[in-house]
Image (cartoon, rainbow, N blue to C red; front, side):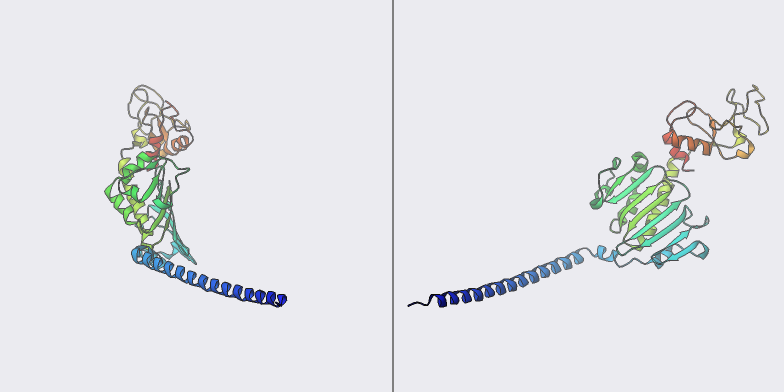
Length: 313
């Protein structure tokens, strides 16, 4: 007679042994799969490093001391070294005197450049590596041959920056930075950039200086008048510096269209004439007006483009 209980016990024990064998085999197979995956990832990483040596290089050469040396900082009164970077208040006789201050901050992944300009650049300019740029919430993209393959470039006044960026020297400067720069922002008198290489900091500063030179050339010819050159609104006869009324037609001396005060000798080199209707104004007064309202206070023509020119000087 068959021992049913013994048979059931035997089957139960055999099942447990079989389950243990299956689990152990699965564990070994899982370890082998992980090892194979790690080996493949290691090979892919090795290939990637070999294929893109420049990107590897950017993680090595981030030397703050080299930047400080190239900035030619000799006056330590204007220089402050910090734990993760430095700041430099640029004196007016320095080779980078277009900037009033330069600050560099180093992180584990990149370096950030912050700079303030003594002279504002017109409008804004945003430059981003194409693979990291976002299309939303930006003005119209500026399309420049060669550059558009690498960067996405945006501005509130694209026509102005197109003149700068289509210059071959400007193109070459930005193309040389393509491996080492993540983004560059220019906001009037403020510059910010994210880079991966110490030399890129200086190259960006030089790009801004070169851009300023081109813009100055583009916007040359702004009519600025000394007080000695003021002319009568009525007959066009020049005013002597001491005259309160025109000696030819007896018309009163021109006044600032904004503050309505006479333009006196102390206002020398601070008086401009508006290109739309030849009305005089204190330079700072008309700039403040046009920033709030882009239209001429006299004839109401739009002077947005002219304001960008005035801000260059």
